[in-house]
Each structure stands twice: as C-alpha cells, then as structure tokens.
Length: 83
Image (cartoon, rainbow, N blue to C red; front, side):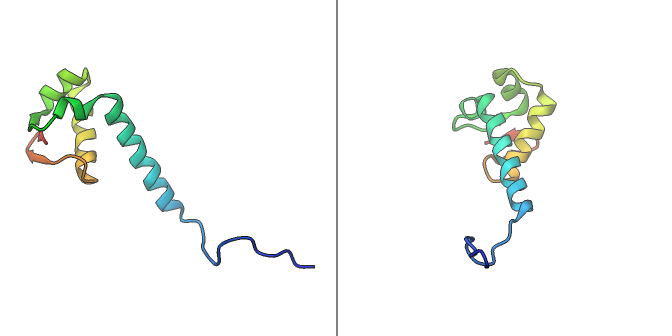
C-alpha cells in the first residue's frame, strides 16, 4: 500500500533561502538590541556618534550598518555616515 504524499507538490526545501532569512533576522536583532534606530532617528549620523550612543565598538557597528545598508534598512550617505 502506498502512503499518500501529504506535501504541497514538488516543492523542495531551499536551504540557501532559509539561511539568508536567518542571517537577516540575526542582523536585525543585533540592530534592535543596540537601539540603532533610536540613535539614528531621522538624521544622518556618523559611525562614531552612533557607536557612542549605542555603547558599541565603532568598527563592529560600522560592519553592522553596512550589512543593514545592503538589505535596504539603512543608507550610507557618505563614508561612515548613515541615515
């Protein structure tokens, strides 16, 4: 006797997409824990200003902000300045 397929057709797991979604959620979570959005507000801010206000390492925060910019959350308006 054959067991009926209870799946949704021929859809296969896309592990790459799952990993990408998971990594994006981790980046967003880090930004939220540091209160980056509150520190940014509606202004263009320097990485130094944000690092001081978020109590974060400036180099690590810069990498985080660039990652956020790559997914459209922030924008690097000039080198090391974000909106």
